[in-house]
Length: 181
Image 1 (cartoon, rainbow, N blue to C red):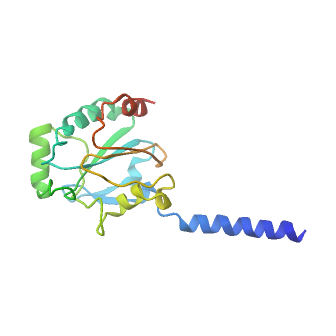
Image 2: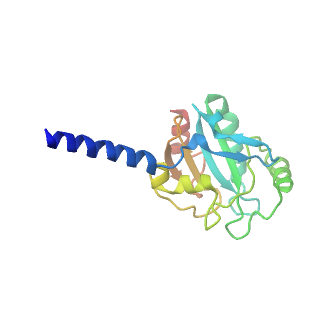
Image 3: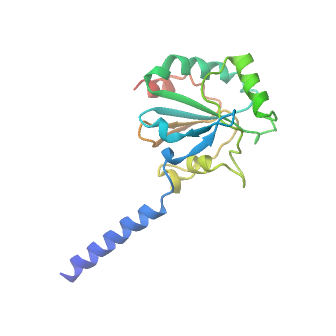
């Protein structure tokens, strides 16, 4: 009888510790758009989300074209891409919010949501990217943002699914299959 009570007590303590050790979920994040408007991730419930760190002066910058094409094709299927300009790699995103918006619109016709410029690594890493890159917070995996246009896939329930490195095209069979499934 004492063993059962101790086991139950241990089990309840473990559940409590686990619950308190986990960070906020994906839907609890709030950020600002390039225009300074509040954007609540709670509005993304039920949608697949691709988070991508972007830059305007990078060899990968032409990925904006494919990102926009995929967004246009699948956005009515509960899918959204959210871009986060970041200047962490070779200072390849030096622009202001207005300059970034103008560049994305004029050169690539970007209509997917673009958020304010943030840091995706280092001591000033944005809270969202701490969640994306830390298993203790996201419950799935540790990762490191290695360069511009790295993609994070989040399922309809706000769970991290995968990290897609910058060289893999958004039009790859793997990504399209995930979006379409």
